[in-house]
Image 1 (cartoon, rainbow, N blue to C red):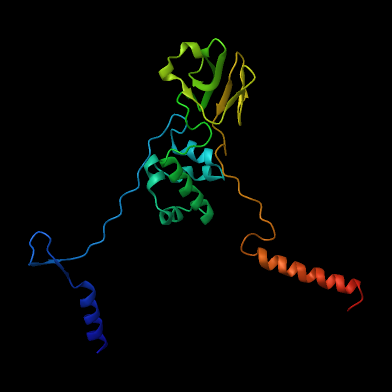
Image 2 (cartoon, rainbow, N blue to C red):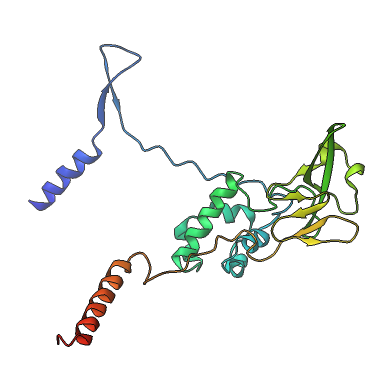
Length: 233
């Protein structure tokens, strides 16, 4: 009896669904519903500042660089699922979630500092100040990326890349994070561990899940101590 009920249930589950035919009014067509297969994840093109797996994991930090050898290629880095990352030994779970978030950001072109530079040599980009005279009384300055050993005036406008996150203070001083001044003018921005890292917040009173419990127990202990000090116990 149980087997008959099971067969009947399976028959209902896999029975074709009858729907009206769109191309032939008045007639009925047999059609089976199928799930649309999920589209494969897109693999972004490496950039001059992020040319390979090792550099990407170095930039986003949180010790993920130690897992670089687990990714055989750039495509694997951006196509492996969370379950596959777990099978590769990428632990703890928050590390996988962090990597997945940064993968999606990179796909969308939401790079960290220096991600928009074009001229990079051995993981280092040179930034210099470009001056533009709008009129005899107005001059604007902004930070651009130039090839190593080149002056701003020697580089065609089409090859100059304006760099986000940096500004000019005074007449020639570039201000912004993670840069080093170089002789002859300009600054150097280099790939280093954690350059794009999202710093984790400091847990207060046990973190979000236990915060209410920890603070309640603290208030109880404080009230108890206060009553004892008043001689009520």
